[in-house]
Length: 202
Image (spheres, rainbow, N blue to C red):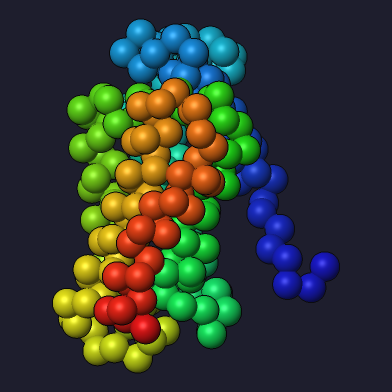
């Protein structure tokens, strides 16, 4: 097929093992706890050696961080692809939907993973490192979309408000044990910050 990149068989096999390790680890983390899960348990679930695990991940933390990071890396591209006429807050809510929709697909597991992330200091620290990069990416794309010069303080404020809205929705979702759907909480959070974002950037 034209335009479709076909990976070599060896690369596809490596990706399959990586995905299986990640899936096994996430299930164990979600249902028995992060600290309680050992690397041996993860490798046993997949049927590979510890050496194989460390070929793909440096630590248990990296499994969750890379899962979150893979979503964050697509944030700027998703924002760039939003319809040109959208208000900034609507475009940002659409981009943040990457996280919201993914978490909403498997609510029970995602809720447990989110709880681990916000309540485990090592994981929260790694998440915040990634979040700082997403902040820069969103601010840069907002400038490109709405004609503001790079470095305009309003861009960083707007991007920060969008990420704070996401965090507020996720933390409320965790604190209330999934009582309200995450998409509903995200919509509520963006409804509160949206007028401020649009007033700065629109």
